Image (cartoon, rainbow, N blue to C red; front, top):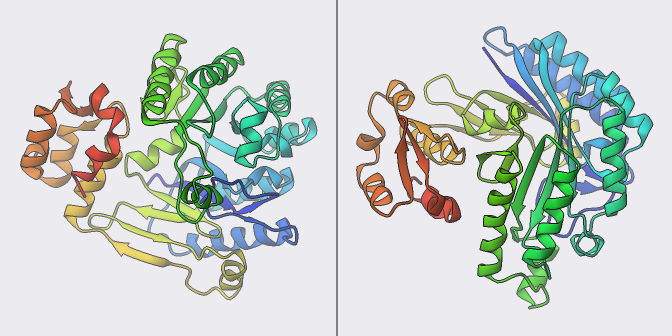
Length: 381
């Protein structure tokens, strides 16, 4: 059984103004104690697995996992290999903030078997970085990328955000130009989403957050696809672009409803059997999480066993995120009915509206559907 692994490191030096992830700015944290709890959780859960597993991917996310020293990362990697059959060719990714990297740390990460770097650049414009509350500068981002290459990283992804306060399509194009000029293997380009509970949300409600209008945001989305495809990138998921052979193997597990186990505070897990799958998450609070692990107490919160209908819906709204779409034959083998039989009214309307299409046996979003993808997904909820 293939089971991908996710490690959540929720600590940051400073929480960004737009961020609603499970993260905390905590100068009192002792990373070694937290990682010891993560390793203990990995040991406890391994004892409960019904069958032997192999892990094709391992992903360190956050928070800011690049605050960890390489010896702590290596401890987790070794535990994954010992208990979960981490494959020799596994994709091992760490998310990194350019403001936390040094040449030595990057070299040590490579020595610890990390082979993919996800660099949280967000923008190459220092004005935008300040507005986002980021702790790094554009120069640090460029220097971190060069240092990663020198350390031996041959698989580097860059995260960017468009439709920022005060941003124009021309400014966004400059970000895209700089990312492509670095010859990176992967680019994630997200439109800014203002989430409830964030400082940006409070600023938006008070009228102090001046965002680009819908036309400008749409133009930035369209220019992203057109420019990156012309530069040789494969548009394989709504917000993700890769050089041939460099798709994120780990993230594809999520979109394809593959098995994954999450370790750490607030981490989510999913197993696609028994029946139609089960999901659960860990406590968000790092302190409560560590206390529970150290007592060997049950961690699962918000545990849910999926019904067949819920699994069908997930197959659609996750699968349609990928440009390959939902394979009709695989859907029928999994659920015993065709997609048209599962969602006759929804698919009839979406097809007639030109928002989805059949291509080579797969149901996929059209260019129009990509633009309003969230509205399409809502049809299956």
